[in-house]
Every structure is written in C-alpha cells, then in structure tokens.
Length: 357
Image 1 (cartoon, rainbow, N blue to C red):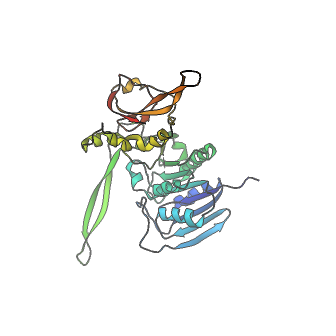
Image 2: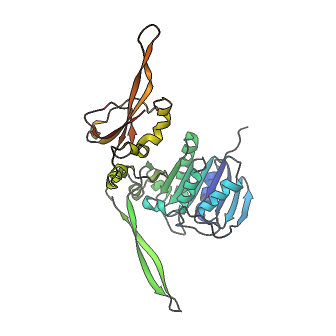
C-alpha cells in the first residue's frame, strides 16, 4: 500500500481565516495535512522571525487526516517550528501557503507573509506554492481559488519537479466560470508609493496610519503577473531567492576601479567555480560547444582559459609520448551568464582573458 503523502499548510491571515479553510480542503486531496498557522493575522511580515519573545503552539483541531495548530509567531516562524521541530524527521512532500486575502503579485512578494511562508518552506527540499486571491473583501468568493489551486497543485505533484521549487500563484477575483485560464508569467516591475495620515490621540500624541498605491512601471507589458490578473488570468510566477543583479556585476567592477586584466580578480570572476576541476586536470563540463547567437553580436565577454595537461597523447617514438595541453574557453558575459565552452569569435569584444593552469 502506497504511503500517504504529507502536506504542510500555513498562511499569514491566521489559523481561522476563510482562505486557509479553503486551502485545507484542497490540501487534503493530496495527502495527510498538518497546518501550523499564526494565532493572529501577520500580513506584511515577509521573512520576519521572532527572536525576542517566547512562542506558543496550541492544538486547534485534529481529525479526518487534518491537524491544525495555532502558533504565536510569524508565517516563517510557523514554517521553522514545523520542519525543525514538530515534523522533524518526517518527509514533507508538499508545502502550501495561503489562500491569501489579496494579491501578492509584483513587488507585493517582497512584503508578503504568505510568500514568506512559501519561500521558507522551499528551503526544506519540498515543492512550495504560495496562493493568493485578488480580493480583500471579508465576503470573498474562494470557489475559483480552490478550483485553480487544486489544478496547479495536482500538476506540480504529478511532475515532481526538482527542488528548490517555489511558485507565486495569484487568482483573479470572480466566479470560476469568469476565469480565462492560467498563465505562466514574470513578476511585474513596479513599486509602492506610501502616504501617511497624521492624527493625534486624546493625550495629544502624534500617530500615523499608513496607506499607499502601487505604481506599475510597465503597464503595457502583456507577459507579467499584473497584466494576467487584470485580464482575468491566474498568474503563476516561478520564484527564486538569488537576488544577485548579474547584469551589474561587470559594470560595478569597473565603477569600483577593479582592473579586469588583473589575474588576481579571477576568484571573483571564475576561479572559485572552476579552479578545483582545473587543478585536477579536468575540464568542467559546460555542455556542447556553442557560439554566441546573432542577437548577441555586441556582447562583451570575459574568457577564462583552462590549460590542463591532458587530452591529446602524441606518440614521438616507440616508447616516448608527449601530451598536448587542452585549451577550453569558458565565456562569461557582462551580465554574468556563462555559456560554453565556446570558440573565440570576432563578434565578441574581449574584456579580459585568464589562463588557469
């Protein structure tokens, strides 16, 4: 008999929210469910953790394959106590966070406690999905959210993707029959502009209420999560935690006055990645040889040359041999992306060349 999968559920609206109740219905279709969610609403907590106060865990309900617990911390606190204490030693097959009241598209992902819970869960080696409904109303209709959530979760479970794996899913407001389908898209570029309302309490002390509006930096783009939601589609954005701006790495080195011809810079550019293989006389496997696409004719590139004493064995006489060094060029584009091994091409403007022997 196949062992039933274990599904972990959390959110940021609290253990008794309508959104998590809807998600528990979906999660139960995929295995036994353990939900640890905040005791009180924790919207906007992102990846925050609690370090200055004790935390309290209590059982809310247990039965029919679903266990629900309330925790006095943030969504990430809930994830941590689940994986590092409550479920420690057990294999969690899937983590779900939501269903949030309100969209977490675009820059909202940076503030979202819902996505904080999903992203943190993805660190523990299981697929993680954050789910949000673009409706803040207390009377929000979660039927479409349940239908699309089940469809997406089922597809992920059946595909069993390699980890780390995390999705930011946003479902538009409305009845299921009004939905146009699912679109895999990218995160919209935009930002929030806040406004503070100043007030005074009965003792004359000044206080503030925060409000604001989202500014869409690319309203004409049709491949973003904001566009998908505005046009009736469920947006699905794959999420990663590497926030390195690779396009700025080479320009930043020039800004900071680093000499790209200095071999001592190789650790920042490539030695740390490749030197171990080179030292062993092994050329790293970067796939088949390739040339730059025509669209990248003007790309600046840094070539790292590996010269290793292996490869062509030349017979000089009956008992004497010589070894011709093997040369392999690994190209690192200015935006930090690697491709290769490649042949040197006149279409590439060389910034620097390193020889690692």
